[in-house]
Length: 92
Image 1: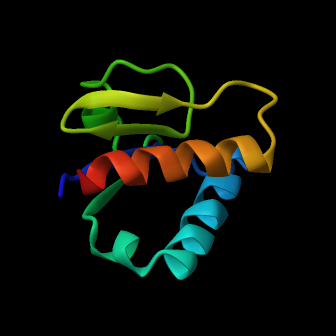
Image 2 (image 1 turned 45 degrees about the vertical axis):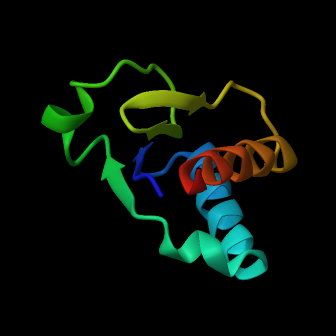
Image 3 (image 1 turned 180 degrees about the vertical axis):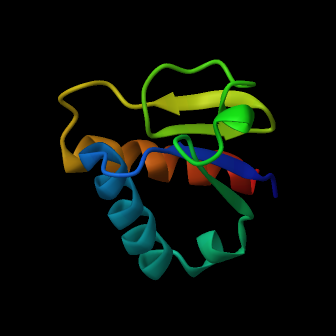
């Protein structure tokens, strides 16, 4: 199992969708709850966020590799599918 670093921004509608998707996925797949996730608020931890190569949030890294960066206009289902994909990768 690998750790996920999740970069979010306060007030971001895509991040809210991502968090909702994460909670929903954890209810559907209890094994996801065991994956360590470090939630990093870009606006509250800029010194940490600046060390990673991403432009948009939410962005998810597994073992320091970016596996997901939200694109503008993604709907809830697209964000949820990407969170699920990253969670699956972290289980490997």
